[in-house]
Image (cartoon, rainbow, N blue to C red):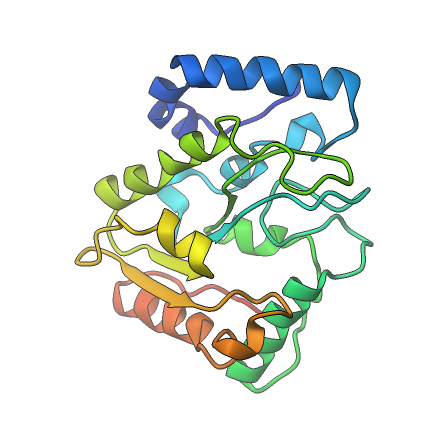
Length: 223
Protein backbone atom coordinates (compact mmCIF):
# COMPACT_ATOMS: atom_id res chain seq x y z
CA UNK A 1 0.00 0.00 0.00
CA UNK A 2 3.03 2.29 0.33
CA UNK A 3 3.13 2.41 -3.48
CA UNK A 4 -0.20 4.32 -3.68
CA UNK A 5 0.06 7.50 -5.78
CA UNK A 6 -2.43 10.37 -6.03
CA UNK A 7 -1.91 13.78 -7.60
CA UNK A 8 -1.36 16.57 -5.07
CA UNK A 9 -4.27 18.61 -6.45
CA UNK A 10 -6.64 15.82 -5.47
CA UNK A 11 -4.83 14.98 -2.25
CA UNK A 12 -5.35 18.52 -0.97
CA UNK A 13 -9.04 18.66 -1.94
CA UNK A 14 -9.84 15.25 -0.48
CA UNK A 15 -7.68 15.67 2.62
CA UNK A 16 -10.77 15.94 4.81
CA UNK A 17 -11.93 12.49 3.70
CA UNK A 18 -8.60 10.85 4.59
CA UNK A 19 -9.01 11.78 8.26
CA UNK A 20 -12.61 10.59 8.69
CA UNK A 21 -13.33 7.40 10.65
CA UNK A 22 -14.88 5.64 7.63
CA UNK A 23 -11.70 6.14 5.60
CA UNK A 24 -9.47 4.82 8.39
CA UNK A 25 -11.68 1.71 8.59
CA UNK A 26 -11.58 1.41 4.79
CA UNK A 27 -7.78 1.65 4.77
CA UNK A 28 -7.47 -1.12 7.36
CA UNK A 29 -9.85 -3.34 5.39
CA UNK A 30 -8.04 -2.75 2.09
CA UNK A 31 -4.60 -3.34 3.64
CA UNK A 32 -5.79 -6.66 5.08
CA UNK A 33 -7.32 -7.69 1.75
CA UNK A 34 -4.09 -6.98 -0.15
CA UNK A 35 -2.12 -8.85 2.51
CA UNK A 36 -4.23 -12.03 2.46
CA UNK A 37 -6.12 -12.13 -0.86
CA UNK A 38 -5.56 -11.40 -4.54
CA UNK A 39 -6.94 -7.90 -5.06
CA UNK A 40 -7.14 -5.65 -8.12
CA UNK A 41 -5.89 -3.23 -9.28
CA UNK A 42 -2.25 -3.28 -8.10
CA UNK A 43 -1.82 -0.95 -5.09
CA UNK A 44 0.07 1.66 -7.13
CA UNK A 45 -2.99 2.00 -9.42
CA UNK A 46 -5.78 2.39 -6.83
CA UNK A 47 -5.86 6.18 -7.30
CA UNK A 48 -4.55 6.16 -10.87
CA UNK A 49 -7.60 8.00 -12.24
CA UNK A 50 -6.69 10.94 -9.98
CA UNK A 51 -2.97 10.67 -10.66
CA UNK A 52 -3.31 10.85 -14.46
CA UNK A 53 -5.97 13.58 -14.42
CA UNK A 54 -5.28 16.41 -11.92
CA UNK A 55 -8.22 18.37 -10.52
CA UNK A 56 -7.64 21.49 -12.65
CA UNK A 57 -7.26 19.38 -15.82
CA UNK A 58 -10.62 17.58 -15.62
CA UNK A 59 -12.78 18.28 -18.68
CA UNK A 60 -14.94 15.15 -18.76
CA UNK A 61 -16.00 12.72 -16.03
CA UNK A 62 -17.07 9.17 -16.87
CA UNK A 63 -18.45 7.21 -13.92
CA UNK A 64 -18.10 3.45 -13.55
CA UNK A 65 -19.05 1.18 -10.68
CA UNK A 66 -16.50 -1.54 -9.90
CA UNK A 67 -13.02 -2.52 -11.14
CA UNK A 68 -12.79 -5.64 -13.29
CA UNK A 69 -12.07 -8.69 -11.16
CA UNK A 70 -10.14 -10.80 -13.68
CA UNK A 71 -6.36 -11.19 -13.78
CA UNK A 72 -4.54 -8.38 -15.59
CA UNK A 73 -7.66 -6.35 -16.29
CA UNK A 74 -8.20 -3.55 -13.74
CA UNK A 75 -5.76 -0.65 -14.10
CA UNK A 76 -7.37 2.07 -11.97
CA UNK A 77 -9.43 3.65 -14.77
CA UNK A 78 -13.11 2.78 -15.22
CA UNK A 79 -13.98 0.68 -18.29
CA UNK A 80 -10.24 0.31 -19.05
CA UNK A 81 -8.01 -2.78 -19.05
CA UNK A 82 -4.27 -3.37 -19.01
CA UNK A 83 -2.35 -3.31 -22.26
CA UNK A 84 -2.67 -6.51 -24.24
CA UNK A 85 -5.95 -7.55 -22.62
CA UNK A 86 -9.00 -8.33 -24.71
CA UNK A 87 -11.46 -5.43 -24.74
CA UNK A 88 -14.40 -6.12 -22.39
CA UNK A 89 -17.89 -6.00 -23.98
CA UNK A 90 -18.81 -2.63 -22.43
CA UNK A 91 -15.63 -1.00 -23.74
CA UNK A 92 -16.19 -2.56 -27.16
CA UNK A 93 -19.61 -0.88 -27.18
CA UNK A 94 -18.10 2.46 -26.10
CA UNK A 95 -15.66 2.29 -29.02
CA UNK A 96 -18.50 1.27 -31.36
CA UNK A 97 -20.51 4.35 -30.35
CA UNK A 98 -17.51 6.64 -30.91
CA UNK A 99 -16.95 5.14 -34.37
CA UNK A 100 -20.63 5.66 -35.22
CA UNK A 101 -20.61 9.27 -34.03
CA UNK A 102 -17.48 10.17 -35.98
CA UNK A 103 -18.16 7.94 -38.98
CA UNK A 104 -14.71 6.38 -38.94
CA UNK A 105 -12.86 3.55 -37.19
CA UNK A 106 -10.94 4.09 -33.97
CA UNK A 107 -7.32 4.99 -34.64
CA UNK A 108 -6.23 3.84 -31.17
CA UNK A 109 -7.98 0.67 -30.07
CA UNK A 110 -6.04 0.83 -26.83
CA UNK A 111 -8.03 -0.51 -23.89
CA UNK A 112 -5.83 1.18 -21.28
CA UNK A 113 -7.63 4.52 -21.98
CA UNK A 114 -4.54 6.33 -20.71
CA UNK A 115 -4.75 8.64 -23.74
CA UNK A 116 -8.13 9.89 -22.59
CA UNK A 117 -7.07 10.35 -18.96
CA UNK A 118 -4.07 12.46 -19.98
CA UNK A 119 -6.35 14.69 -22.05
CA UNK A 120 -8.58 15.48 -19.07
CA UNK A 121 -11.03 12.58 -18.83
CA UNK A 122 -11.51 11.45 -15.23
CA UNK A 123 -12.35 7.75 -15.49
CA UNK A 124 -13.74 7.19 -12.01
CA UNK A 125 -15.07 3.98 -10.52
CA UNK A 126 -17.33 4.26 -7.47
CA UNK A 127 -15.40 1.44 -5.79
CA UNK A 128 -11.64 1.49 -6.30
CA UNK A 129 -10.65 -2.08 -5.36
CA UNK A 130 -12.06 -5.60 -5.71
CA UNK A 131 -11.11 -9.12 -4.68
CA UNK A 132 -10.13 -11.41 -7.57
CA UNK A 133 -13.03 -13.26 -9.23
CA UNK A 134 -15.53 -11.76 -6.76
CA UNK A 135 -17.46 -8.90 -8.35
CA UNK A 136 -18.61 -6.21 -5.94
CA UNK A 137 -16.64 -7.69 -3.05
CA UNK A 138 -15.37 -4.29 -1.84
CA UNK A 139 -18.66 -2.46 -2.18
CA UNK A 140 -20.17 -0.98 0.97
CA UNK A 141 -16.81 -0.63 2.71
CA UNK A 142 -16.42 3.13 2.28
CA UNK A 143 -15.15 3.63 -1.24
CA UNK A 144 -18.53 4.93 -2.37
CA UNK A 145 -18.46 7.62 0.33
CA UNK A 146 -14.98 8.63 -0.75
CA UNK A 147 -15.82 8.86 -4.45
CA UNK A 148 -19.09 10.65 -3.59
CA UNK A 149 -16.90 13.48 -2.29
CA UNK A 150 -15.24 13.83 -5.71
CA UNK A 151 -18.42 14.85 -7.54
CA UNK A 152 -19.35 17.90 -5.40
CA UNK A 153 -15.71 19.02 -5.35
CA UNK A 154 -15.78 19.23 -9.15
CA UNK A 155 -19.34 20.54 -9.32
CA UNK A 156 -18.73 23.32 -6.80
CA UNK A 157 -15.19 24.43 -7.62
CA UNK A 158 -15.06 23.94 -11.37
CA UNK A 159 -17.19 25.19 -14.26
CA UNK A 160 -17.87 23.72 -17.70
CA UNK A 161 -17.14 20.06 -16.93
CA UNK A 162 -18.97 17.34 -18.91
CA UNK A 163 -20.36 14.47 -16.82
CA UNK A 164 -21.28 11.26 -18.65
CA UNK A 165 -23.66 9.20 -16.53
CA UNK A 166 -24.35 5.78 -18.04
CA UNK A 167 -26.92 3.61 -16.29
CA UNK A 168 -29.00 4.11 -13.16
CA UNK A 169 -26.09 3.76 -10.73
CA UNK A 170 -24.10 6.57 -12.35
CA UNK A 171 -27.20 8.74 -12.62
CA UNK A 172 -27.85 8.41 -8.89
CA UNK A 173 -24.23 9.17 -8.04
CA UNK A 174 -24.34 12.32 -10.17
CA UNK A 175 -27.81 13.45 -9.11
CA UNK A 176 -26.62 16.62 -7.35
CA UNK A 177 -24.30 18.02 -10.04
CA UNK A 178 -25.00 21.72 -10.69
CA UNK A 179 -26.47 21.56 -14.19
CA UNK A 180 -26.34 25.31 -14.59
CA UNK A 181 -22.54 25.19 -14.45
CA UNK A 182 -21.88 21.86 -16.15
CA UNK A 183 -23.13 19.61 -18.95
CA UNK A 184 -24.68 16.37 -17.69
CA UNK A 185 -25.23 13.66 -20.32
CA UNK A 186 -27.28 10.61 -19.33
CA UNK A 187 -28.07 7.35 -21.12
CA UNK A 188 -28.29 3.61 -20.68
CA UNK A 189 -25.13 1.72 -19.73
CA UNK A 190 -22.86 0.37 -22.52
CA UNK A 191 -23.18 -3.17 -21.15
CA UNK A 192 -24.43 -5.68 -23.76
CA UNK A 193 -27.56 -6.03 -21.61
CA UNK A 194 -28.54 -2.38 -22.02
CA UNK A 195 -26.53 -0.79 -24.85
CA UNK A 196 -29.41 -1.15 -27.31
CA UNK A 197 -31.78 0.51 -24.82
CA UNK A 198 -30.30 3.98 -25.24
CA UNK A 199 -26.51 3.88 -25.11
CA UNK A 200 -26.06 3.38 -28.83
CA UNK A 201 -26.94 6.63 -30.53
CA UNK A 202 -26.59 8.79 -27.41
CA UNK A 203 -24.17 11.15 -29.15
CA UNK A 204 -22.30 11.83 -25.93
CA UNK A 205 -18.81 12.08 -27.38
CA UNK A 206 -19.58 14.63 -30.06
CA UNK A 207 -21.85 16.56 -27.67
CA UNK A 208 -19.06 16.69 -25.10
CA UNK A 209 -16.58 18.04 -27.62
CA UNK A 210 -19.01 20.64 -28.96
CA UNK A 211 -19.60 21.84 -25.39
CA UNK A 212 -15.89 21.97 -24.59
CA UNK A 213 -15.12 23.89 -27.78
CA UNK A 214 -17.96 26.36 -27.03
CA UNK A 215 -16.38 26.97 -23.61
CA UNK A 216 -12.90 27.60 -24.98
CA UNK A 217 -11.49 24.17 -24.15
CA UNK A 218 -9.60 21.83 -26.46
CA UNK A 219 -11.90 18.92 -27.39
CA UNK A 220 -10.97 15.34 -26.49
CA UNK A 221 -9.44 13.18 -29.20
CA UNK A 222 -11.66 10.15 -28.60
CA UNK A 223 -10.46 8.32 -31.69
